[in-house]
Length: 398
Image (tube, rainbow, N blue to C red; front, top):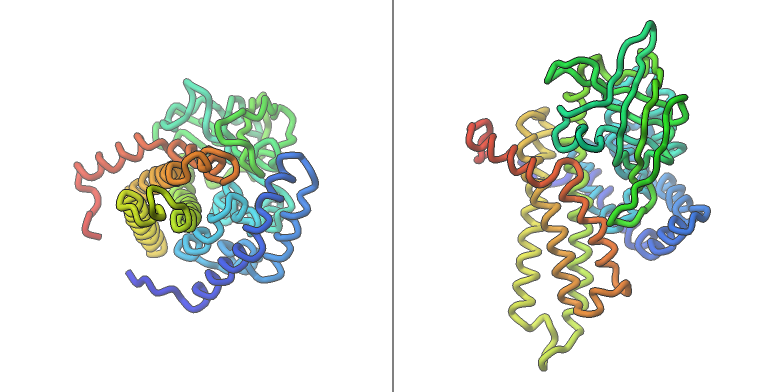
């Protein structure tokens, strides 16, 4: 594996970092305030227009869709810079779930579906959502518990079911809905593109969560009452749902990880400035060995997370998707935990100040805590890695 970035990617990385430092981070509180108060998102829209003009828009998409055609490695590198702010990815139209949904549409959607949905998504004219998770006893960490159904009725499929934690669903124009189409344990699920305003789609509520709502990160609950969709609204073929969801999730985990690594990196940078100025027990905090250990542990964990993500992205770029799966589970668990730990340590280092809203760590932590549940909880990823290690299905020396 070569750690050198191509000249084009290295240039894009510098441009995204500069854009974040000069334009996004200085106004992130204004973007958040406009969103919280339901105001016109003029600050966000202005930055999005600027990102377009500077050639930094949807860099994960091919050029014909307005992007730069960067592969998984490029996505990881750039998303790490965007992730230094909770609003960063949205500025470049690279936020979840739209980014992963765009990649899925690009891969398997019909030409009609691409024209209808992918183009507007790439231009940020609409947003999308992925509806897989269901309230118990439905699909959660175990997708085979899927209870939402789709049955063929003449020339249409009819969807009935109940979903929740459909991120961004209330504002979305299109939902990617996973439904059971047979009892086959491997090929029993299918993905459908569903118009958010189609008859029978009921928005139950937006779920109040520990992490405050921000931009598209609002968790919707839906019921589907006899929703009819045509064959052109299938993603892939009948029975491809589990396979396509897994194909979407592996790279999506990496993009999450890199955004989380960016936020952890910024947390360390803010803490570094504080401990170099704050005097306690006769010397600045950075001179205390216990404080130095906190920074050493954070640096080591972030470096390990970088290497895990880059390695997994490299495997994906080699077309070794199946091999990448256990490594993506390792990476997701490691980075989600290190982000929570880094933020917790930052609050501790800042003392009473760290517990206040005068610094951003509390808000960031409330969003970060979901990282250990989203895209598979810690326990499922640990089980996957443990099972595959015992079975010897992947090489720890790769």
